[in-house]
Amino acid sequence: MLSADKLTPIRLAYHIDEKSQLYLLGSTNVNTFKCDCKDKFQPSILEGEINPSTRLIQFKNAKLRIKTKLLSCRNNVMNRDMHKALKAEEFPFITVDLLNAQPLHNEKEMQLGKVYSYNVNTVMHIAGISKPQLMQVKFLRTKDNLYKLTASKDILMSDYNIHPRTPFNIIKIDDIITIHFELLVTAGK
Image (cartoon, rainbow, N blue to C red; front, side):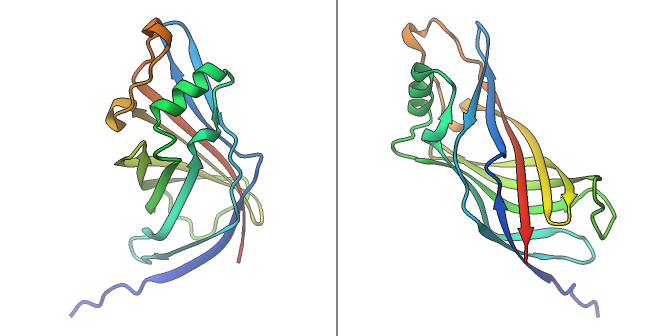
């Protein structure tokens, strides 16, 4: 008889540093634009389980919540239009649920200064629509308990029923937008 893998529980306190960068990149028929997130993140606890044989990390209630109205495109008119398109009044947060992560490396201990890749299954909740999204996340251990996580994900705004409007519809905004994460994380026990 085969025995089931015994899952190893994980529990890790962490804090996302305010120097972290989270932004949207897009383009129009006129130029490109960047919308920065000015949100501050509270310390939190990451919980989950690791399957020792598959090394899959299964997360429990792991979320990244971004206040929609704190996205700033450095232009008040564009900010207003973006917040309206994202239905910020009705849905004040963009939420990324972390479901699981599969390491794309074989090392048991993360070495300082070395980049490790993970495939991370998420569900993104934007403007009231939820869609699964696979992201490749790069993980760099910069000091004993300091990490840098980077990821970029192209999404179609139409998948989330987002149709940005501009004054007189003179400027056309492309459907594809890139969400970029560069999170500086301090982890502890």
